[in-house]
Image (cartoon, rainbow, N blue to C red; front, top):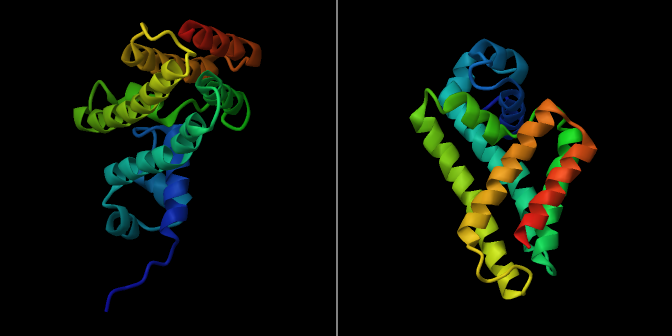
Length: 193
């Protein structure tokens, strides 16, 4: 007879996401995960497959939760430029509030792992491409609404938005100044028009 889990897998995954987000992959040992998640090594490996697989699952949780919630703002009716601004303002507000000093889990992962782990970076590239694709679609809608000149390349603008968004998250780690982050948001949005 199979043993039942003695812990809540979703709760453990949420905790693991926050641990990796704050400490990084290399800064988080399996021993630390055991202590902070309240599960033993065997359960961690049986449930998640190990630290690497848990990290990948935590990145998925981040994309499905934090990122999806912010990007859903792009789907709201009305001005698409206003929706883009709202995404950036929400990220800036989080970065100086509840998320002060932690940056973006994806950005942090890319910076930490890119030099050494191409397989992990392919996952991060996929997640970046998913976000860029969302921006691309909303930029096309903005062009159709007459908010952005049709001569502008929506692919290039989507990549610019990704760069600006991740740059905003890096800047918020270094200098979490609300006025400075607002300037970044203002210049980013102005560059679209």
